[in-house]
Length: 474
Image (cartoon, rainbow, N blue to C red; front, side, top):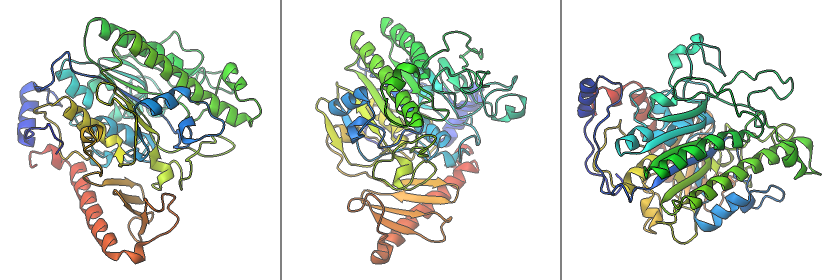
């Protein structure tokens, strides 16, 4: 359990609170050892399908990401940062619950939805006096029951209705799933409506300021939200989930011009990432202008590895094996950054494994929250000791499952199966980060121990998905 936690309330107490409040999630008072003035603002930025190699600071020879490079040189650069899954929806669930999405039925993209029994970071922070906002791609459930929208929205997908405004977010400018990265409401080839809408917290579709770079369209909603919170001296939690560089990948003329001389699809791919990076710079300037940058936790990552199809979306996983949809490193190791000048005063690069699962326990630990009702177990760990230089290894491994693939990532070794556990490979990620040499035969005890851990974790996830975490037995 992360430092700073007191003993959590039991699942029975959680369910009793649900019964008393008459809601599907307990809204309990939770106290913090951090005063309102000291409480950090928290921003979770995430891109969609941006590979580990798709940043300047990892040595990309063409792509321009000056603001990400600046973050990497001024804050915490996590070079072994893992998305919770090799596809988007599960990773997004891991970000705001701290729990692996196989515990609550989000196995893949467009699969399941965030159930009301899960407690999100937004719900916890609202109890701390934060104002909360979600901006960009949601992909954890449908956003309307009434009209056809995006991949599953409308009457046919009503069973999967679970919008951000019913999961703790006060302000929303959210889509269910992907949109074009330029003129996001229009199909890039036909100019007809794309079929995915931006929805606000009232369940109303946006109708204006929807042209040009999608990243700018999103940030135009984020900035007033932050300005309003800063003016009222209210701590805020902002989730900014960009669509770039997910297909359909489109860049505007000025961004295409920056990449003259590269193939057409690469122009669009690089251009939409640079457009996103530009908005990240706008966000950082706003924080400085409002004199709140020092005590703002600004996180950045991607939701999974790159699509990696040269003629369509030519992303780069850097030196790593695999891409999006794979549990090899290229599918799950992604850019990971944190700026928090009040606590991270000197730039550092770390190779301790970190994960999107860690956001939830890290924020609770940073706020010194004494008690909070949430389903257990939490799969992430607090990274506060890492900020303080006291964590040199991760205290527990990271489990992964995605369709027929399962894996366990530790500080040194990674156990992986791509055939539902029939066979396993073992890689020494310190000596062989590209997963070239299977050393399972040389380390049978390591394989056996990691397999026991992985089997136990999978069994726990299956019990969670069956409802054990919600039925008062834990």
